[in-house]
Amino acid sequence: MNIEIERNPSRHDTDLLSRGIVSFNEQAVSDLEPIDEEKRFHVLARDSEGSLQGGIRATCYWNTLHIELLWISETARGAGIGRKLMQKAEAFARECGCENAFVETTSWQARPFYEKNGYNHTATLEDRPKGHSSHYLTKVLA
Image (cartoon, rainbow, N blue to C red; front, side, top):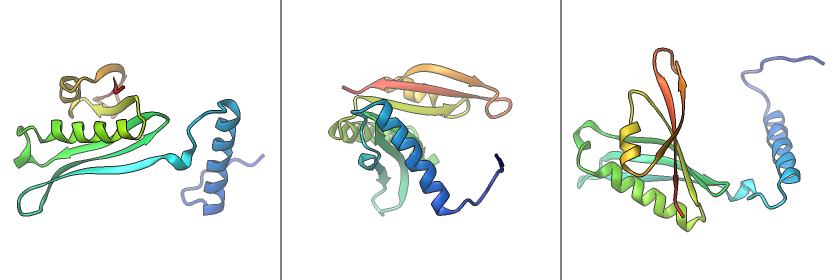
């Protein structure tokens, strides 16, 4: 067995890896939501001139909303835009059948914001990145 690190593997190899885990998961959990039902989406906030002032990048899969990132411009912070973005993302996720939500945030980012929006802290990974912490939060949507 030859084991190597490849930084630019072929599309064939990456597809084979993906198909392999999908097949394994389907065999282990027969009613698991198919990967092709994954819904990637963005929720965007624009000012009256159409300039992007913030947004969320997220994915719905396995009955869970995964908040991948949330950003608000400095000039738009504190105006409730983050809360409105979260509400819109959560409403869309419910429409997609999501019952849970999950987010990772770091110690200098937005843990208090997520907690104010009903998310519960479930775990912390210390010293990630070095000198800081990563926090994992969840929320029941159903």
